[in-house]
Length: 215
Image (cartoon, rainbow, N blue to C red; front, side, top):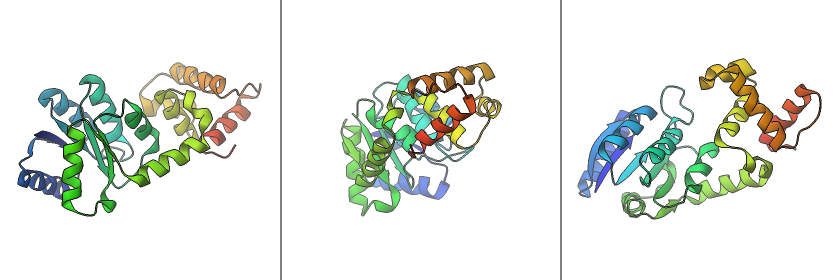
């Protein structure tokens, strides 16, 4: 089996390489950031990519976004997310993308090495291995935010940045898009959430409240 690893913590990355080697699993390439993951997946077409969620530069959700992009460019690439965090925004997209060859394990909840290597093999074979805690958190968000299901991933991203208090211009800078593109996304958000109030500020607040699960 040939794998690639996207993990910015050098000690953990090297530990994974040695652990996998003991199981006769070859690590053909590693990356320390999201673009690096996409690049090595395209180059090596591995049997599995092991991905951390939070990597440079912002240490938020680069790993998951890169995993989605890698699967878009190399369809069917098995992905095993191995992280300390449940990143709800993109985990749902990854797990819902056919749910074949997908795993999401929390580092602190892996009881032994055999459990981890078993998950590696199962996901590489096209199976699904999701930690129960991950499922519980994702279902909790789904129950709180049913109205958000109609939003595209980019619209959810824009709404999440709105919830952080960013202005339209700040959102545009963060996503490297034009102000007009952000305005279009926000108009779509208002429409899909059925927020037709004439006061745009009021609609903005209500959209953020919907994202936070408070209305």
